[in-house]
Length: 190
Image (cartoon, rainbow, N blue to C red; front, side):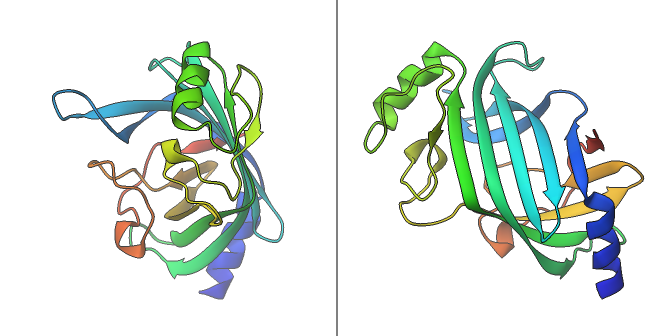
């Protein structure tokens, strides 16, 4: 089993990116009660010593033509053992214990942040990154003094890196019980 984890870690080293814009269910709801879609592209870098960097660009549209925000997360991956979804799949926790930044890419998003996330921050402005690391940040449900963490999974097949698919009801991966049970669209080696 340790040999499987070591092989996965070695094979994951390097940079990965979204094949195309992706869609996820968000925790936000439309007026009819359905979940709003969350469109994004990911760029992921796995480094020695279980370090990772993740950049997410959130868009207003399914083609990624109208970027709203860039999110940068850095930290460590904690390996929790095999995941039953596929042979050699592993449970991992992504812990943002180094960096967590948000950059508005559209004025409308900056305006929203200035209304809902102004305490403890400079005024939000387009293309101006601010660290939310260790701070309260209501839009993402972050509490002051705690690191963001997700209970996820990884699965490698050829040059495709899969993580867990989002829960269709919008629940996050904040507990072991919410750890994903399906695979989402993979990242490809950059």
